[in-house]
Length: 447
Image 1 (cartoon, rainbow, N blue to C red):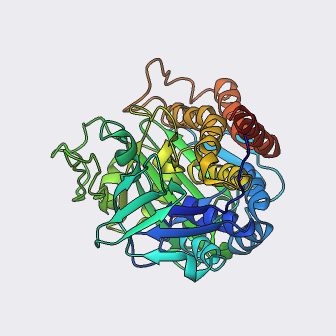
Image 2 (cartoon, rainbow, N blue to C red):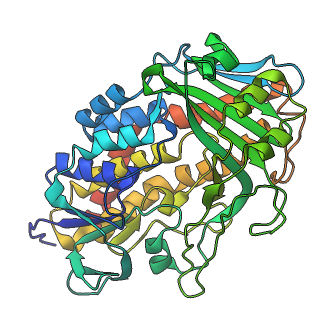
Image 3 (cartoon, rainbow, N blue to C red):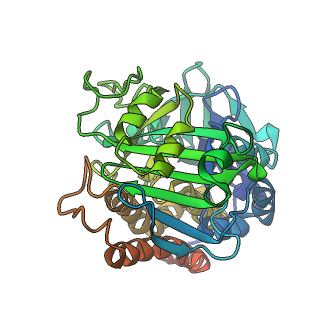
């Protein structure tokens, strides 16, 4: 079969981390693209985020500039170890895991996203664009319709619109939706210094590196951000109530409603909580994790945690439309890898789309992407649920067979957590690139 050379144009729906990084990858490869974001501008909640070694490798392979500006925005840990503490019975270390030199550094989401946004051509971004329909006809380009009445066309459409993805619903139907994991969290970024600061509350050693405090039904994570001027605090609490139960402990007004016709949530899964609720959960714990909770403001932001474990999509593409990041495989934050896997997706997509010189081959390219990414990303969703059971000693929402003793026993906890993190970190991304190219070339030869 003779393949006619023709440039392709890519539409990216969603301007979060995955969509933005994909745009950077396409720009680096000279691929025409437009990013459509429903908000009025790029914005990310200002809490902290960390990226593991695999994500940093993916950044470099996408575009060295992407990684360079990331390193300028993050904060080194005091120690190159992730340290887990028995926060309930002893305040002693359960286990520590080597992160690699300057590995798993954290920063503020808003600062990292802002640095990356500067790498995107403004002419390639349209804000205020909420997708309401997508049509992939047999002949002609894919068409997008927006809530403001406008339309657009592209040869490729990538839905990177997050856990409450409209694109997912349009592709697969409302039954493929995120579900409540029976976990919610309080997030805050607090000053490191001063009378009420993190150093005064926790001590210099605990405030300057990455720590997790484990115990029954809850855990807390801290790590430095903002070049050491601030401490990121994440307190995660198990919840045995069904989602929407009016008697839930938190006083927040968040609520999740799903439209019967689209399955898309109204995104009201965040709201203001009460520090007093977290203090009640941690009342019987050791002094250090209680001090961590005490760093939260009186009315901290509360986030309910949803994932795609219970209703996974069967594939990441249909024809010339594909999903990436949380839209495809939303996972909880407990292994610190959801955003990093979205960056891996962006690498796979930018790699294979760089091989496409004819719109007729787009579906084969996206099929290759789905095959390369599906098993690993679905594993992360499951592994994240299993990891939080270790952290919270099989608390509310635990997976069947979870043993509360495993999270307390270093001889079990260490190996269990090590192999999961190493599966994430020690992934050969250049081999993934070669594999996605090979799958695409095989499909090309079969045409």
